[in-house]
Length: 164
Figure 1 (spheres, rainbow, N blue to C red):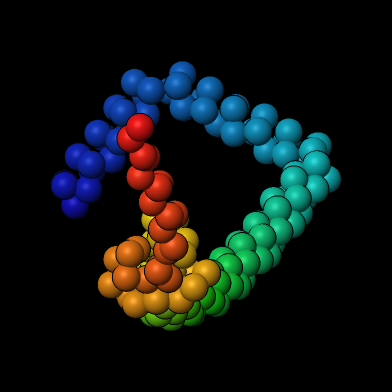
Figure 2: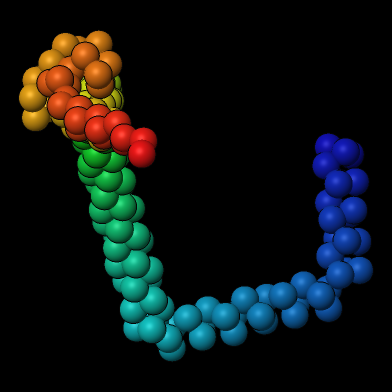
C-alpha cells in the first residue's frame, strides 16, 4: 500500500507542476468540441464530400484500369497485324526479287539477240555499201566484187595510126 501512496504522490506532483498547461488543454478541448457542435452540418457535408470523392476516385481507377486493359488488347492486335503485314511484305519482296530476276534475264537475252541482229544488219549494210553489185546482180558470199560482178565489156582499143 505504501507503493500506491508513493505513486499517487508523484501523480499529484506532476499534476501540480503542469496544472496551468492541463487547464489550458482542457479548455482547448472544450472550445474544439463547441466548434464541432456549431459546425456539425459542415463537418457532415465535408465527410460526405470526402466519401463521394473517394468513391469517384475508385470508379476513376477502375475505369483507368479497364482502359489500360483494352489498350493492351488493342496494342496486341495492332502488333499482330503489323507482324502479319511485315511477313506479307517479306513474301512480296521475295516474289518481286524472283520476278525481277526473271525479267532481267529475259531483257538480257533479248538485248543480246537484238545486238547480234543489229551487228548482222550492220555488216550487211557495210557489205552493200562496199559491193552494191552483189545486191543488184547476186553473187557469192565471199565479198569479192570482181567475182560477184558480171563481166564488163571493154571498150575497143583505138585503131593503130598509120604513118605517112
